[in-house]
Length: 427
Image 1 (cartoon, helix red, strand yellow):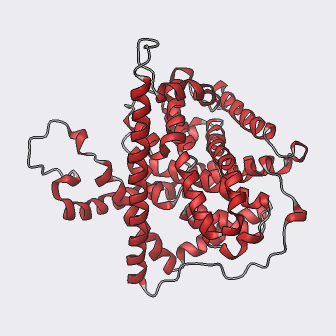
Image 2 (cartoon, one colour):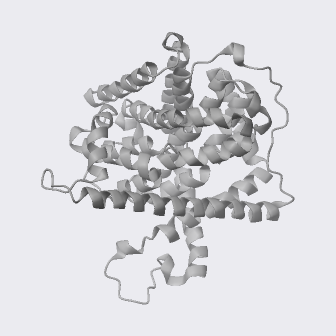
Image 3 (tube, helix red, strand yellow):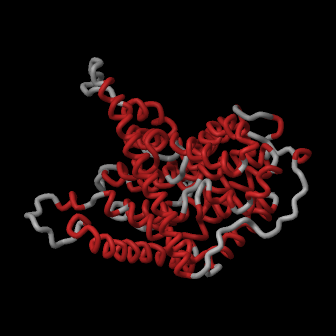
């Protein structure tokens, strides 16, 4: 049933579209048809994935696959690291079972295994055809041209820099609006490897965690396209003719070669994630230490988290979160923006069941599921400087706006999910 909470989430839709329109480079070119179509597409995708028994069973199967993948990964981790992997047979008396969950041994190895599997599925052409299928959907339903549509689809599964690699030869000829759109979509979604990692983090506190995370990344792509088109409207005169040929892709010599090279690529991602988390958490801790020297406010010391919670609480409420949870939800949005979504998901998973409303946890899962954070600005600058060096100055000028658009895109997705009946998600 549609109730006051669902109507509350529609406030978020209006606020996000209004903010993007106000910051648009051409307010008169608001894409009304695209806005209606993109929001309808998101709602239809969510309703279909959770409403149709066959698709819902597929999402449930994805959850079981994540559990199996996590268990299999732990077998490999335990072989290398022994009891440090959190195995039941600990050599010392166990007083805190929760302490067995160590991020470095339980989450990062999953990314490594998924990257290897993704390379294998690409070599077998399974992932390639899935990507092309989504590309056709985006091309037909959202009016994208062939190359940007393919890159948008690839970004959902491969990541914010890896996706555009498939149209590398076309990047120089894209219009400014299309280039901005790719940057925005990259920060609106997550990669296949991190989807599994997030589901692993949340599975103890969120039913059907894998289904929600997978759905979040897919349906946030249309949101990213929409907000990018509002902020930087399409200019048909700037679009050069394209004839989409064979995309630039990784070619593997054999299945074993795919696994080995996929593992190497995964190792680079794992090290990047670990290093980024260490640096950004350390920097925030330094700032919190300085803020702690100031007089207490409200009986507690000042901190980055408290400040971000206050700033983003109204936005969190507009997404459909109960006001009593808005402070915490706002701090999670701030953590996602400053400390990466990994930190935000870890903190969301640390909130005990019952401490916040189940609806809040579901909405925040969708709001946090994207690469829009400060670290991604550097990742995109480095990546696009290699992919299309002649347009580096353009990327520098739009990457921060793309981060803001990607951040709002996941919030738009969360609002649309919040506006839908809770019974659809089993609650």
